[in-house]
Picture: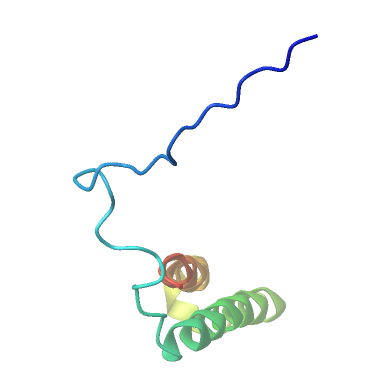
Length: 87
């Protein structure tokens, strides 16, 4: 049985006008305060909600009523926004 011929083909290189200009290696890492702040917001939000429920809605701020839930969940959502920017 005859052998097949080996193709002599050059390695593909994409055109220069299509290549991305910024690579992941050139972007700077996130500052140290970003994950620290995000974790603090998560812990603070959970603590706010736990205190609100265990105190039978008397603390942290009694006059806010159910807005205390918005504060607790808002802190946790803010931490998710921060963590989405973390590299």
